[in-house]
Amino acid sequence: MIKVVAIVGPTAVGKSALGLKLAQKLNGEIISGDSMQIYRRLDIGTAKDSPAELAAVPHHLVDICDADQRYTVKDFQAKAKTIITDLSTAKKVSLVVGGTGFYLSSLVNNLNLGGKKDDDLYRQELVQLEQAGRLDQLQTILKQEDPLAYQQIDIENSRRLIRAIEVKRSTGKSITEQNNGQKWADFYLVGLTDDRPKLYQRINARVDKMVEMGLLDEAKYVYDHRESFPQAKNGIGYKELFPYFEGQASLDDCLDEIKKNSRHFAKRQFTYFRNQMDVDWYNISDDKNYQNDIEKNIMKFLGGQND
Image (cartoon, rainbow, N blue to C red):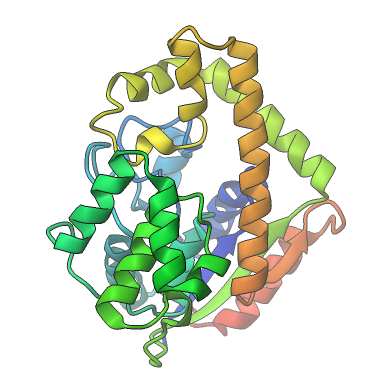
């Protein structure tokens, strides 16, 4: 069976750096498991690897579409499976790196996402609600049609709401119960975490660094195209700056909002991975040798498949 390594955890914890190091050591290639890094021209706010890092190791599912294109978890699942299968044939290690929990779950649990794509009438109805800012109505629909999913997914994320409603309508089953019963690959999930105060310091420092790198210009680009960027306009690091561009809030207040929302997002990420997936966790502060431990455990998991 194909073996896959995934590196998960909250934002700013160091997943990308570890993935790059492991890929170089293990004859591996990186598959992005981030729902925003797919977009071209959105580099800073999405915390993409630098051009030098992207060149050092082959990366997949980065910069694959424009921000005016809609990209779904079903798209990710299909593309990632193909890439992983091809890499396995080539005797390469697949390292899925990212913090979008539902993306990872779609692969690890082999979710049957069902349904048609963007031309589906149900999707059009739901997307219209999303574009109208009717998050409350999407929440109501999900609560009525799939109360189990309503209790377990991030109901502040319109894309998660739409997908959960779609899956329930097209398959008759809750998205939280989706598993087609056929294990297509064997996954070892490496989870990075840190003490909360230290993680929050890392998040705050990352936002400050993003500003130095030109985050405001990138966010202004998203703001100027917000009507045609259905997913990017809701990304953390962009949407919080819109009041600044409109002259309704100070820059400092908007940056504080980015930091706050990033911290909240990190907490949700950790909760999702801890509760929904079988992850081997490593605290980067408590274990000074965590990278060596991770490498040793990955080699044990791979069992010499690439020798």
